[in-house]
Length: 235
Image (cartoon, rainbow, N blue to C red):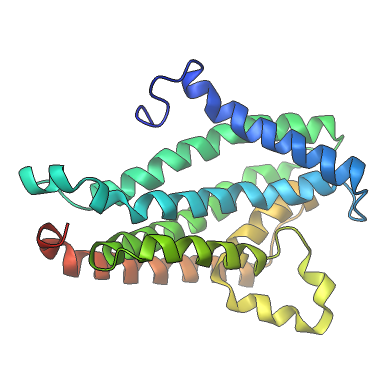
């Protein structure tokens, strides 16, 4: 975080200003100019756009975390897990700080602040497990294949449009089941329902979010630890 905001006049304040300005633009575009048919569309969108941004930025930073610290890895014996975890943690802090401007936007849009906001740590935990597993995988893969970091950007763009973020899954009627193949949907759905809808997901959806997160974490951790001793020869 210090490196990210180094020599910035506003420093850590950008962690609040960036999401706030982004939310204001989205609120103006979708609530005023486009006149979206979904009520309080800005809140509908932002409620899942923020956690997806946390997910995508964590993967982007983590993919370069081992290669980018090659000099340190070659000189000092340090646990390699530190680097992708640092990428996730810094973006986690940004995500948590962005909740402050989200509350402001919700109040300005006259969207109720439901008690289900108290449920948000649950999908956040599931999303963190999924994200951490993915960061381990992409950080390790990028050591051997430097194209991974470039391919990841394309994958994240496709993933964004394949996830009900700017649209509702209900729009697809009987084809909604397709989104159940997307492991990210379950945790993001928890954020949208808690912030926008004001009620809790089903038990099946909650369990699915943790199952996907657990599988991703175990697989990503196993792949990373299996290969970490070889990183020094490839960076």
